[in-house]
Amino acid sequence: MRQGVCCAICLSGLALAALPRPAWASEDAPLPMEPALRRQGWSFGLSTGLTVSSASGYPNDVAKIDVPEYEVDTGLGASLGGAIWLGGSLADWLTLAAGFQQGSLQGNGLKAAGGSLHLRIEVFPLFYRGGPWQDAGVSLFAGTGVYDVKRGDTTVAEGEATATVGLGAFFEPWRFWRFATGPDLTYVHQFSRSLSAHSLVIGWRLAFYGGP
Image 1 (tube, helix red, strand yellow):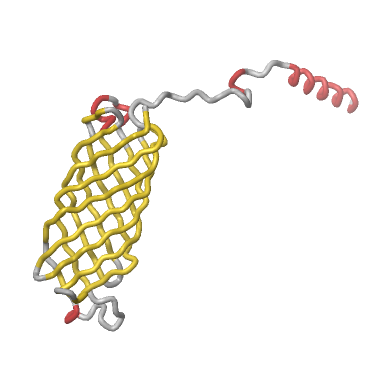
Image 2 (spheres, rainbow, N blue to C red; image 1 turned 120 degrees about the vertical axis):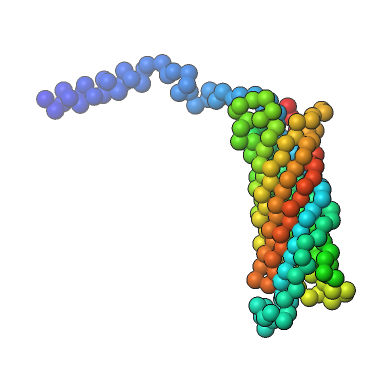
């Protein structure tokens, strides 16, 4: 009895092995891929515009941090700022990149400036809806940088190795060859134990995509 069961199992295994494999089960069969419609391959971009900012903080000295007499505040100020990045589009709706952003301002007799290196994600969440939605995206980036506030030539507040986070929304409906351009709105926050800076950039962006 036991030998008969073993023989039946062996014969069943041989029969299954002899059956032709379906095309989808072939290890060598390439997976079907939808062709890119808007974005593919490596990409780079830049954005610039009016930057409305404010910064406050203390000297980068543990004895002076959080001591009111050493605190400075620029109030609101306006200038030009922007960002640049280089990366690649993994799909029509997703681009990953590394970049740099910077900004500056003047207010209350103070000059403030800073920048950061960051990793950047750009997503076109409604791409599947077609039409103009294919060119509407959101960006998210995070990194580290420096920021300082000066009165004349004296640094009165400083943030070394500040953390940076940014969130943006953009629309790039105008295209020529592989370039796409349109308005861009970005919020950036740089902060450390000794300093905090906020920026809102209202501007324009230009992006290049390697394909299609």
